[in-house]
Amino acid sequence: MKEKKKVTTRDIARECFVSQSAVSMILSEKEGTHFSPETRKLVKETARKLGYEYTPRKTRKVTDMKSVILIMCPSLATQYYTTLVQTITGKAQKMGLCTLTAHTDRSKEREEYYLKMAADNSFYGVIYTYVPKAQKMLNHLDGTMPLVLINDHNPELKMELLELDSKKSGAMIARHLLELGHKKIAYVTTPLSKMELPRRRRLLGMQEEWEKAGLDASFIKVLCEEKEDRALSSGNQYYDTGFRLTRKYFEHPEGITAFAGTNDFVAIGIMDAITSLGFRIPKDYSVCGFDNTLVASFSGISLTSIDHCIGEKGEYAVTMLESQHNSLRLKKNKNKPLIRLEYEPHLIARNSTGPVCKK
Image (tube, rainbow, N blue to C red; front, top):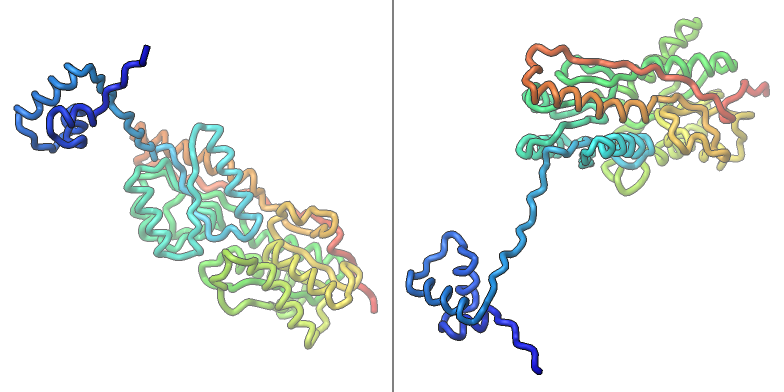
């Protein structure tokens, strides 16, 4: 026996002399449609007579953005930022939250775009991993959305802060090199603009430690990139800076015995430049960096670096957001003091630094 053919909206349309889309709109009771009462009655009665069963389409559930943390990140070209983002995301997921990483390239316009999106969609909160440029807008959002900054202290911002004093980091590197007998060193860095507070404070910490030792701060030669490379996302500007500026220095060497890169990737660029010229590390030159990222510990690199508590800062930033979120929900945020938590950096000495070579 032949199986009975299933009735469709096309069959109803043919019987009623109307379009198939009209049948669908009438049976689904779609709002804003204009059909005469007679046509509506005819379509419904025909559907019933033919044995048609209307099954409403499942509507897509609107994504709830209230469980999203926005991570403002200037670059994903170094392990510092990728590790920080990964740590924040891991902690957020344990709490049933999601993260959205905004790669801003330190653009004020991009920051403002993402902040407006976060405000319009009532995001859970915002974590900045660098010194913000959209400071006015952030201060305007204070008290309406949880905000946390991971960076050096910035008194101009009304944000809770996870701070690591980069001046202390610079002083630690300086003491380590002085103890090894280094008197003339180079600080190799990407641009030292006003917004790049950690880079400038690392240098300041090194210079102050040099002066404490009775040495002239000018003995620290600054090899600095003139301007930020906007091709940062497509290549490793930090490594390229370390390699190129170090090679350039050796065109007219000035008696330097150690190099400090403003981060680990700059330092690795320095190391490759030195070895490409036939010198040995640390016998001929010592090299150190900042951040203690994973690559610094690789046996072929073994870079002396300053640990900046990346994992701890990332996890606790989410905890601080949660505390603010609960206060806002319970309306207890009025006159609530801002929390500023400082982490202590520490030196990880490896094989890239050693005593001054007596030539």
